[in-house]
Image (cartoon, rainbow, N blue to C red; front, side, top):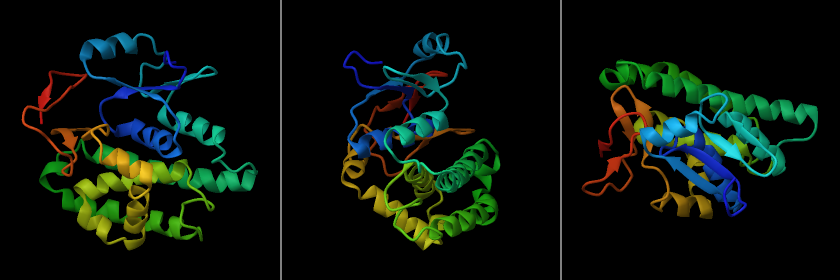
Length: 236
């Protein structure tokens, strides 16, 4: 918990597993402390205090937890984004976890040699199949969002996934006009648009076999480095 009394989100200076949470806070206008770990010493100090030794970590006056999806679930329920009835909640969970599974597959691929040498194999194969399924699921909701008529945690998580595809697999994303339109719709939300245009959003999506995955749309100044919490700082 921060000194200001606002919730505190602790994570590395990357988008990764915390970006959907940051987007939720930002878009909903909820003040929070965005605590970013930028050195190996800081990470080791924080790590010793966490039961599961993982980030992100969330704390408020009532709760202290890790695991990004647990945090998103808590925030979704706290802000009225999760349907109260069991049927609605099941549909919500289906969409959320479907998006999360594709995100995990994308991140796992980033650690394979083919990510650098032959990304088109993944793009034209598994990734395309995943997106076909996600598009069908998205189209099953008549509204502009993934679930119901208002934004939810599913939309924030889906935006994070699609934004990484925008950065590294744009041709694949372009084949799915509905998903691409959803990505643009979320990016245009005033608070999200302002966040994207600021220097507050991390320029690094996450780590891969070849180092940090830097957003090609990010503004990089001479001398900028990625304050790597696992090794020495990496020039960008």
